[in-house]
Length: 176
Image (cartoon, helix red, strand yellow):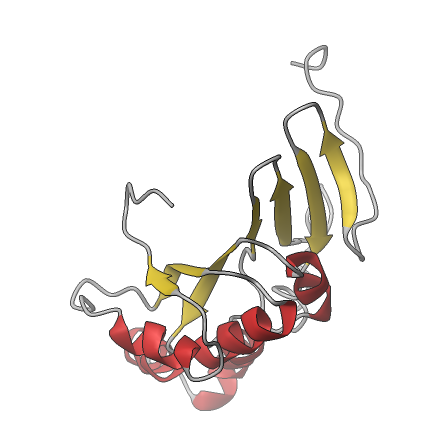
């Protein structure tokens, strides 16, 4: 594999072109998914999360990755045709965390802070899309994403409170 892949670290604290060929340009930026968590000691470095922008001759698509509100992601998304974004129902997610972990609130605080600050509520997605001037929002990676959660309309409606363009709740195998 070493002869096929030549990995190297690059600074993507601001949107940066990371790949280009005749068909696509790929931009990346580090987002805010790990800003509140204590960095774990890992042999390969700190955990990071990224957002990506794919520019083709016919369309621009941006993927947020897991992130909280992020000016860097907003800059990356400016003018995109499609913004594909994660989304969280914070109240349901925190209720599920409390139910499953059954730990004192003080012990849950880092997880609560992470969920509250490092994921996008529907209104956050709407503000991001509106400020960046994207043409369409596609929601994916729903949290909590529990099996009984079959109606995505609260997520879509939340985005629409801040964004007037088309909003779609993605399902497996959808094409846009």
